[in-house]
Length: 155
Image 1: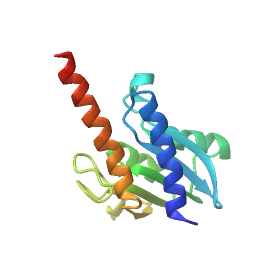
Image 2 (image 1 turned 90 degrees about the vertical axis):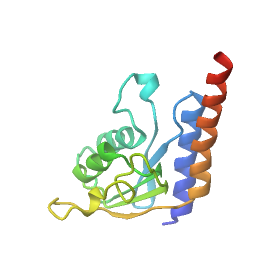
Image 3 (image 1 turned 135 degrees about the vertical axis):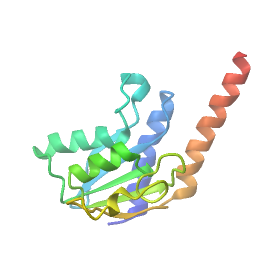
């Protein structure tokens, strides 16, 4: 499987989030080399703190496979998962996680904490970070730069 190709698909989802003024984070879940679910952040649109791209993609994949176990699946996301999403990944038994940008304020795979490496947990996804990191990071930087600019214009 080509990690760059799948991350580009996750970036497409992030761009959809940006179009509706959501934080541009996108996610795809892949099984047997095929995308089985796609999602992007919808916290503002849904007024749900848990409407992260990963959570929404996991829910779609579970419905598609008619199972809560996603143990034959890989998850691609443009930003390092937060504690909630890392927990959901562990609980759904996702085999492998590939993320783009590192998250210095909430990343729970490598940056702030390493939930996938907690030896007491019964599932430990494989993971790799930094895939297409410049593109993934730039999306977020541009989004928040624009938000700050608009905020200053209002004041």
